[in-house]
Length: 404
Image (cartoon, rainbow, N blue to C red):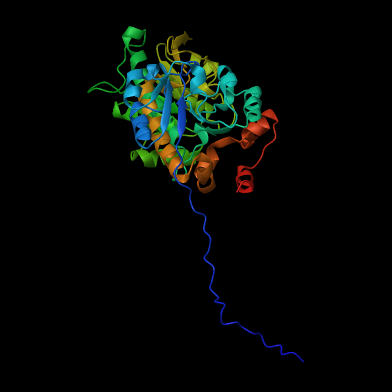
């Protein structure tokens, strides 16, 4: 009977195998196109020359359409001195694998889009059209939306920056239109010794409301803030570090405060739909003649019943003796500051993507960036857009996992 004893040949050597780890690929070279925006009232540019210089010095190529920085007072020479190539043909810019826009994709852009292109731009869901999404899906495009791009702290850096600009700007605008030169009441926004301070009512205690409150207080105005979210009101108090008059939105209290105020700011936001109308026409009729309404919520329909969209060229109209300022995209009126803020977020993001081996490789590691993707290689990965247009939704985590 053969021995069942295991024979070990001394010529073999047994060693443990090394563990195979997920090794990051070598840095990828990025080729970025920046077109000139044709969208309504868009003056911003997504990368400023200083950011372009950093990208070019890191070995990347940037192609800028001629006059792309015109609205932000950047010349073609500013970009070319930073190392960018200037394209005099829109078609040439759109051939870049990565396209960076400061405005949403509009109808004129669609014929130029390339197969498997990556687009970084705002989405602006209220004006989005189903056929835009379908055409982008057909071209297997990967699209990253500014609004949903998160940072390591879990906040939305570009939205926050734009809200900070809008909030600070509304008080400067209010001060301008209260002046006699603009048929206002001839009142100085703020207080001087011996004269009661100007009364400001702010509806909405988000980032816009907070920065509007900050600026109004700094100018010496008396501020009252309304919001239906008590947590937001508490956060506003804590962030400001001073006690401010706050209230939930109760029509009688709101109406009473609007009657005696000089400035009313609408800064209510709604995640997916239209802003709620909380100030009726009757409330506006009861306001003092020459007072100013600034409806920042006009981007999502407005929260004053009397609001109608205006432009940077013709920013105001008068209704019931009250001056209405209802310009959408207020940050575009301060385009250079807004461009700088957007650029500060996108430039480090692009450098990180390059280090990871490209945007695709970065998505494997970066969950915050995944949150901003609404199209991945032609698959719709945003649940809001999917429900709104009745289009097929696919979970981005499953798509990325299936491609490894």
